[in-house]
Each structure stands twice: as C-alpha cells, then as structure tokens.
Amino acid sequence: MTVTTLQKLKKEEKNDYLLAERYYTILSGVNNLKLTQRELQLIAFVAIRGNISYANNRKDFCEMYGTTNPSINNIISRLKKMGVLVKEGGKVKVNPRILLNFENDITLEIKLVHGQ
Image (cartoon, rainbow, N blue to C red):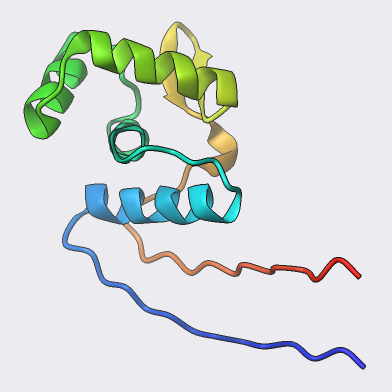
C-alpha cells in the first residue's frame, strides 16, 4: 500500500531577486548542494540579469551585496565546476536547466521518494 503525503506551502517575496534566491535555496537544499548565502545571491542575480560577464553587472552585484570582484571570480569558478553556472557565447550564465522566469509566480512540485 502506497501512502502519499501532500503539503502545500506559500511564500511571498518582495522582488525578483528574493524570489530567485528562495528558489535556488530550495534547489540547493533538496539536492544537498550546500551553497553559501553569497553563492545563492550570485545565482539569483545572474538569473535575473542574464549574465555576470558585463562590468556593469559585476559592479551592481558588488554594490548590492557588499562584495568584491575577486570574490565573484571565486564563486563563479566553484559554481561552474558544479554545473550551476555555464559559459555560453563568452558569457557566464545560469545553467538553462535550472533557469526560470522570476517575473512570474512559481509553483514547485518536489517529490521525495522513499528508497525501499
């Protein structure tokens, strides 16, 4: 006999950046990626802006989150190794497999399967 439990949660965020950060926090948790807060912020930022390759995007990220270009480079390197960020056409972007339109509401279905 299979018993399925359904739980609905709703979380409202103030802007696209916070919504994207929440989404990537959930992905990190479900997949045990152990992403840091700054890494999640960078992924969300890149998802909203489209890339982190342009100097103005890097400057905006540094101002928004109080960090530096060398820190961004270290984070990018780690996230590229994990496959979260990819380089396409000379630009560092979020992997299209995990990129959503954060201007819209998001409904997630997470299925955790018992391994027996």
